[in-house]
Each structure stands twice: as C-alpha cells, then as structure tokens.
Length: 285
Image (cartoon, rainbow, N blue to C red; front, side, top):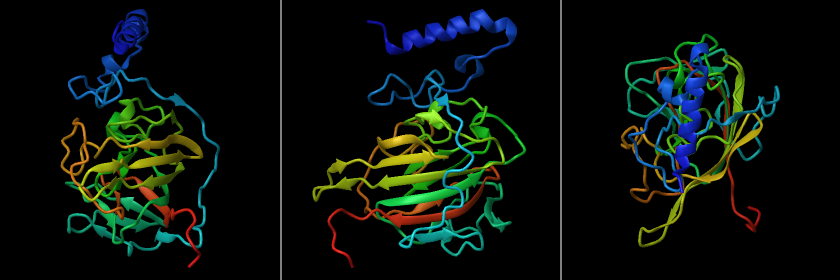
C-alpha cells in the first residue's frame, strides 16, 4: 500500500508540470514548509509540512461576535483603555501601546509578549484582532501573532487571507500540530474574532498525564478547531525548538495565564474578556 503522502506528491508534481508555463506554484515549489521535521503522531505529515492539504476557504459573515459585551461572570482583560490586566513576560518594557481603543504591537528587537496578571481555570476566551491593512511580507512573515496559553499551547494568529503557508501555521491552527478545519480569514485590516474554549490538561498524584489539553476555536463564527487535543507544548515556545515535536514535560496547575504574542508584526487587539467554564451540577454560590 503506498504511503499516504505518495498521492499528494503525485498530484503536486503533476500540477507543477502541467501549469509551470502559467507560473503556477505548489507548496513544494514555493518552499511553504519542511520535510526534515518529526512526523506528527497519528498523521503522515511532518511538523510544518508544506505538502499537507490546505484547508478549504469559507467566507465568514460580516459579523459574528464582534464587539460582543462580556457576560456578567467574565473578567475584562482589555476594554480599549489601558493594559492594567497585563504585564510584560520578560520584565522589560512592553513593546505595546493603546491607540484608538486597541492594544497594538510595536515591533521590537526580541519578542516581548504580554501576559495576564491573573491565572484562569478552564475558560471561554473572546479576542478580537485586526491584521495590518498594509500587506507586507508573505507566509509566516505576514501578520504573525498568537494566543499563547500558559506559554505552552498556541492558537496561531496570521494574515491567512490569500497568503499560502504551511497549513499547521495558518490562522486558527494549533501551531505546528493541527491545521484549522477551514480558512475563515477576513481581508487585511478587518476586525476578526476568536472565541476559544480551553480545557487544561490533568495529571494524577503520581504525575502521570491523564487528560490532554483541548481546545475549541471559533474564528469569525466558523468552527476551525473542534475539541481538539494538543499533543503537547507547541513548537517555538516554552523552550521547544522551532520545527520540533512538543510534549507534556511536567505537570502544571489547571489555572493558566493568557499571553499575546509579539512577533514583530503590528497586529491590533480589542475587546478581550474571559470567563470560567465551571462544572456541571455545582450549587449556586
């Protein structure tokens, strides 16, 4: 039985041969990804594999949860006025500013992420973001940021509107692990929404992992991750080398921090709030 990638390679080669005169390109030809990286468990694909199938494009509605007000039990993390709920990850002056009701990255030397001062248990997170309207760069160099959970699990932010890249690195991906089910990105400059439901991993008293971290991501009203498990820390953060396969190295508490990634791109954020999921059959306080 041929390897699952064999058919993909045949299609890609045929595409290049048949359309090279017209200047068409493929993931392999354009150098969208890598083939010298580890295989992702349960798949035939490498980490950041440029030959992995590109998610189909779904045009989202103009508005889904844009400017959604926070529920009564939510903690407002950013209301358009100040960064009082945040601190710099590395203790240096944060390379961020508040302008026109938005929290904006100021590209700097190094990556100065912002993180919440509070820790949160399993949660529902609402984030609105806008990519730079002026398109600069391509692939991973275009509107790159991310929602980092506990410095370990990343939901990728990228300008993925007409911007090919390796599928596990596009908007809505669990970075380096799982591409989004579909590409629901809006054009550069448009405000977009992530509604993220996250459950922390759990370990038993012997420090044995008994439940992986999982996440549901709704991008602009479209489900792009459906209760998907993280195979471990995503690569490029928390000491995991870029293009490496992550793992659950040590236990951590269910309560986690939220980080906004500074990746040298002037991405903007607004209307950020978070609320605990709670548990079933709990008495009212």
